Length: 391
Ligand SMILES: Cc1cc2nc3c(=O)[nH]c(=O)nc-3n(C[C@H](O)[C@H](O)[C@H](O)COP(=O)(O)OP(=O)(O)OC[C@H]3O[C@@H](n4cnc5c(N)ncnc54)[C@H](O)[C@@H]3O)c2cc1C
Image (cartoon, rainbow, N blue to C red; front, side, top):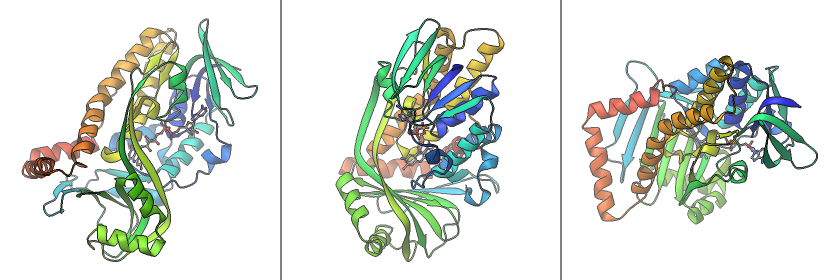
């Protein structure tokens, strides 16, 4: 096969990138180690992804949004941030009757991204392709997969998760931060209405989040030290529901577990470089965010659009899409777009899981100050809704 770009990893970021590159006139192969069914009919993994308006617009441009069943798109009208005992929340509302963003499950996004990429003649999706080696070969790179498959392309892109094996093969290090906590996510039914409002409650000894889905149903996220999160996962469903009712201080009335519970250890990653000779990193392989600020896939989409726009411009002006100059421009733009929020997210996650008295004071003071500052709340709302620029 002689193709322009190989995207390693057919997760949501890799598939969206493949569609964007095909729209830029490039021939693309997506190399994914999982079987076809894992992309075409993905199993629910408990993740509800909060998408900004900019992400929705990106998904619309790629023909992904229209492929998501509207019954699975949930508007987010407001957000409530609480600290400690949750007495004086900071409320963030969308102006007018607008929305802050939308919640869509990771499985729905993946299925729609797979449909959109498969529908493009310029995209080939190769399953059972486990990339194991990569070597620069003249004005291209050769990728070797387990078994017989080998592929030469002008540019290879790693979209193979925050623990990217490609990144390691390329000799690119990453700042990794293990937060020493795990996130338990599941769907629950509850008596009290959620009014399409998300909650982020930095309690003492735990963090709770509520992501509103259908009427009387939400995705519930509980962050605890790993052994405690595991113990919650192991409880029988009825006991688990009672324990969650208590953790929410009965604010949602009676609660019932719907379906499976999923556990995610919290590790943030930030690649030291986003490019190497004829290679680039996108999605979580470049920036693996802590989910507290809900930006992992939003950044993944942004990386896909930014890289595709630089490659499109190179192709249109007859330049080599794998040249160091083109890749450096992508790297610079994506670093500028992500570094501040990556750092801020780490600080928020550390401060709001620190229960020592000085930290408690600071936590309360910060939320209190934010509550009294309408311009700050408007800024957060604008950020969530923002039309992020390509760098
Ligand atoms: C609990 C939780 C909540 C979240 N909430 C939000 C949110 O509200 N908003 C938001 O924007 N983000 C959120 N995220 C982050 C979001 O889920 C991720 O950023 C996104 O899924 C990453 O997509 P990706 O395509 O980069 O990587 P992945 O989804 O990890 O996909 C990587 C793909 O690469 C394949 N692969 C790996 N190695 C190889 C190899 N050697 N060869 C071939 N294929 C390979 C894998 O099989 C996989 O299909 C959340 C994450 C979690 C855990």
